[in-house]
Length: 218
Image (cartoon, rainbow, N blue to C red):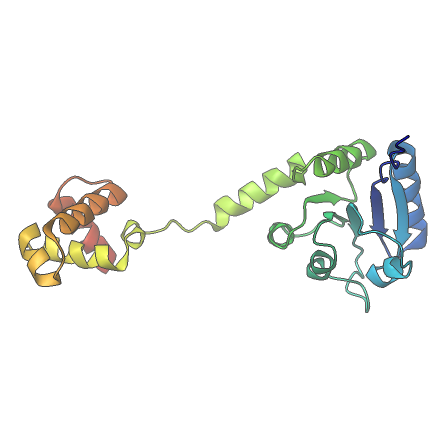
């Protein structure tokens, strides 16, 4: 008779240096995620003291105003140590550029401590379902930040070095055959470059190309 081993319970690790707050969060998780093993830890070293403990399926990384205290891990350290874990940052209100940086470093979700309990549960379920999570309020803030800080790319910068070279020859009045002879490229290659230049810049004639080149030089 084949006896199949029971499936491993998912492990949720809470990294928080404040014991009372950590305990409160653990109680909430145990109540709503009965299938999971909830582990309370100060940091990575504390979690790893139990040699048989698996890599957590979820790390809830709690930040406080003093989160830079000695021994507390960074997002990068958590990602290096637990590359297969989902990571949620749960912390104070921070600047939008910091939240963006967290996601660049591999965070799967960010939740403010001012969020209500229902949003915490939604965040965890979304992240454990393979999605990224950021609350609607923070999405709006980051969207406004990106709009305010966005610098439009000049159309000229869309071209490759070789395309810029061909464009320069075109505005000088050179024909495609003359450009091919000067550059040592096939005529068909120059024609392809010309078509790509016009497509990238959204134009259909050399006069418009001259205008763009003039704007670039100003």
